[in-house]
Amino acid sequence: MLGKVLFINLTSGSIEVVTLEENLYRDFIGGGGLGVRILYERVKPKVDPLGPENVLGFVTGLLTGTQVPTSSRWVVVGKSPLTGAWGEANSGGYFGHELRAAGYSAIFLSGISPKPVYLWLNDSEAELRDASHIWGKLTDETEEALRQELDEKGVRVACIGPSGESLSLLSSVMSGGGAAGRCGLGAVMGSKRLKAIAVRGTGKVLVADSERIIALRKKYIDNAKGEIMMERYRKYGTSEENVACIRAGITGIKNWSLLGGDAFPNFSVYDPQHLRDKYWVRRETCWGCPIGCKGTFRIEKGPYAREEVYRRPEYETWAAFGPMCFNDDPEFVIKANDICNRYGIDTISTGTCIAFAMECYERGIISKKEIDGIELTWGNTSTMLAMLNKIVRRDGFGAVLADGTKKASERIGRGSEEWAIHISGQEPAFHDARYWPARGLIYCADPVPGHHTYATFPILLSKGAHIGPYPEIQFLYGNSGELLDYEATGPIYAIGNSYYHFITACGLCLLAYPFSAPSADYVSAVTGWDFTMGEGLKAGRRMQTLRQAFNLREGLHPDDFRLPQRISMPSMAGQFAGKQIDFDALKQIFYRAMGWDVKTGWPLEATLQELGLTGLVNI
Image 1 (tube, one colour):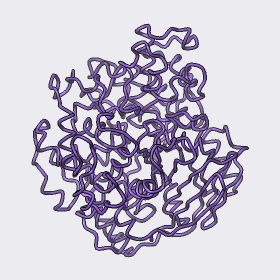
Image 2: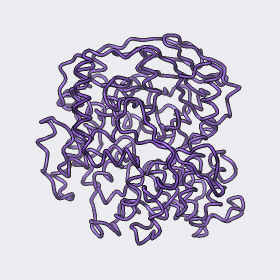
Image 3: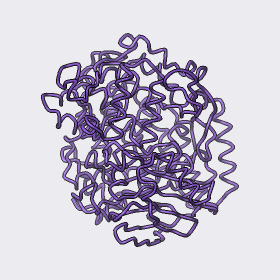
Image 4: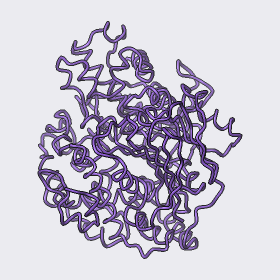
């Protein structure tokens, strides 16, 4: 029921199998919660993120691989080389299920291997093998090479591509075309000379009450069938957000200098139905998912035509290489997404870096000679492609951009810092901070800066949405119709954020869980615990508090996480056009609701006692 944990020292090659105490799972659930609990104890403050003392974790959710709907998620955790803060990247697909089927809940890796290696997990057998022959391969090539070498069609692989090997701070960990993309954790994997983890699991994830899970699953799926958003995600994936977000002034345009449909009049080229009609091949799904929001496209004519299918980009990728770069050619976005996936690099940050370079070029900050003779003008897809290929290979000026806009602006200088859009080093996702103030708050208040999904439930709760059949959340419904009522929304944001981290620590998908899912009941059915939503919210807050302590122990201060002026000054479009949002005030109210000191960010002593963290966290 609760899998074992592998601790691997890549320097010595030692492999240790550990059975954790059950209370650790109950207190921290799994995923990023279990990850931060292990790393807080095992990673010393101020270590080099790319050095041997940093620990890289692959952690499944408590419910991953069970019959619970959408229980596919797993995370990569570690100290982020991009931000110097807590790093966490979430992904789905089949890798998490395979890891659980092999009997493991998590893998933690320290040290640096003297040569490239991959980890082969064949049920209970764990072995480090030479990876010199696959070092340098693209991610899809790596997966195929390992399947052939291991003679296992069912093997699941998580790996890095050339971007991770070259230690690009934007690099991601890839599996089956899905990305654990944020925080540059692919660079940590590359620094350890760990090319891949290959897993084959033939076991079954044991649960306490299978019949109850089946009944809960059936009821949930029956109830969700009438949900419009569920059907739209099934049909379009997150691409369904494309046009609505551009038109409403949510999507950044021209490096966040513009917002709204009038500023990008050809936005209809990204209409999800138009894209589906023109390029659609088939739907794909993650383990145990009744939605199936993934899909594949084929481009039949033009410079990007090929017989092999492309993966349909997500909303963030459409935005990154589309409006953000003032590009209205969707076929280039499809191609750019494919390049990023194969080289293993984050699309959000990479698109933002190209937009930043475009603005620098437009303003005369960088010359054509400096950027390798590339005419990097807005919407010019041929030059965007040339620069993208340089970034993923860390070639020429691409090496300047390959570590994000913060480091790029430091390298370029000449005032370019003004147009470098990042929060403590990480480029924010393409949901405007002012349209939903909860989004902007979480961008700069969560221990992982600039991450858009963490604000989903705070937004829904502040709008009175129904996200679960539990009184611990229901009492908030309808309490705030005015988004600028700080005192009312602060506590709601804190509870919504805690609920999000509980859900993801369970290994459940964000898209399915605004729809009244009985998440606490799932935990009870899987584990046999008498588990309540109150306990789940407390676990989410406990995880968040330990993440916060991790960052503060690194010497970071709340003021280090600030929104760039360009996405915090009064909005130019949307329902809050012209209104100033005091994100500093919102952050203080959020901190107070979380039980953290409003000035220093440190958890209060009473909070540590309430959450059982006294002794672990020393203020």
